[in-house]
Image (spheres, rainbow, N blue to C red):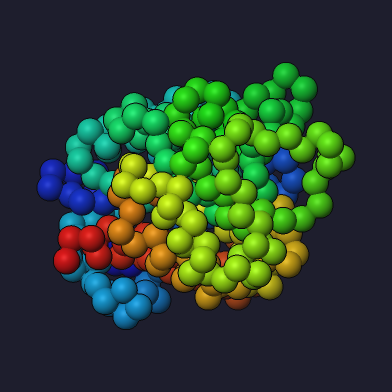
Length: 293
Ligand code: MN
Ligand code: MN
């Protein structure tokens, strides 16, 4: 988006931060190349958001912070790096827009944000719940478990945690698909199509109110026809337009942080996934700008 590349955060409203880590994936890896691909697709975005009526790149002071240092062979060390870097950015007063990387990066980001804001409300767009206890024996950390760990660590208020876009076949029989915690709202893709985008936005708003909210967007919430470049695609998903409208519908919430994960450029075609991701990051920045107008 032609943002200055800088780690100087004095007076900065928001920082775009790459987190090129994908060792938490369980199927197709390669999301470590997501940040550079999303950045490469972002010069397409000119400054004015017509739908929300704001120019975030003019109305906010923004930087591209570069990437967090990761350790590809060590998820715990990487999580520590992410949490530490995120905490320093938050301390400096900048809102983080993190570009993944796989979904395991959300846990350390949630840790850093909860340390600053307390128990967080969360809007989580995904085709998968990512609240599994573990995907491999004795492995608590992977891209399918971050929100379970976050609930256990009391980083998330379960009553204000809304999942949107869940679908697809699960790896376990229905009887084992226990809810991660009482109170968590799971809005399936079928629900979005049946109820409509505005009703979903209303439900999110009712669950969250004015609590500090963290937004986590797994690009696989969007149908693979619109976002093929991802590690675990699920057919029958949201259109890119529905996704844009759902994000715009978060306007007015007290959003304190964002991540956008699971863009895997090796499986992309014509950069359509990265272009969508860059546009969604622009919508995130626009949400920050629109509340100031
Ligand atoms: Mn996910
Ligand atoms: Mn997913």
